[in-house]
View 1 (cartoon, rainbow, N blue to C red):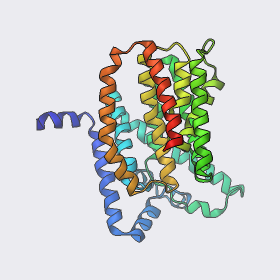
View 2: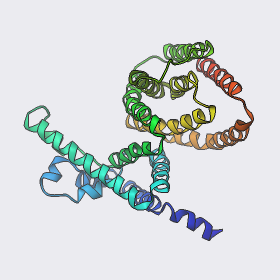
View 3: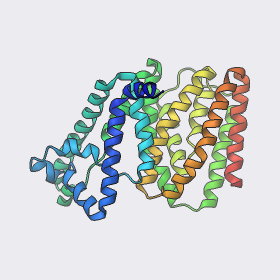
View 4: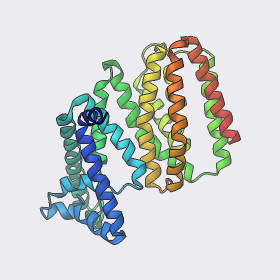
Length: 325
């Protein structure tokens, strides 16, 4: 049993090693206290102040010091992302993709900031801004995962993720600045509108265009940042067409993983995720897993028509639940 577990972990050894290192660093910094955290983050930041003084070691060190809120929020998603990539590509390719993304994006940002400071577009104080974490490398890995998709779906996925990355922060900003009651009615109206269109039997004519794809991604990201419901726009995009139910299910499940990672990052950056949220998530995890296993067992027994009707019923339930809860 132990040997079998070790053999499986060996397949994701880079992911496991990275997770262990960043966990140890995060716990150590937390134990040392806020002042020590600030000094370490300032020392390893890939900001203009450090890079201009030849501290190029920060290009490596900054990837292991993560200042992105509570560890239980970002670590599970990071492990899933890197683990999936390592299983698909292997350890060496994962390290190359992560390193190129981390270092490359850091240097591009540094070049842009340097130009902005020299042209007086930004104040000189920006040269000491903290810049640590795994976001550049993780984003590069996430983007490269689109190569695992069928070629005809790659443009759509890239458009969705880019558009969702814009929509999530906007939706989150609207959420924090709006009254709850009008938001509940607005969310319900949006979902019911999608249900009406789906029930009407309307289909896309031909292959979806770029504007349609981007609109679906932006609206999905916006709704996810606003209410945590990224599903309706993308579900409508798929179910209104002729894509087989099995492909719809696989694409929706995968897409929600990625867009939820964007939402978690947005929520955490605005201080909306705390210990209570983490505890609630842990308590609900068994129910979510059980529901997923049950759905997987029942899915082969359902016809295409039943699958689409069930999706409509669930969307109606979401709209009603937004008003009641």
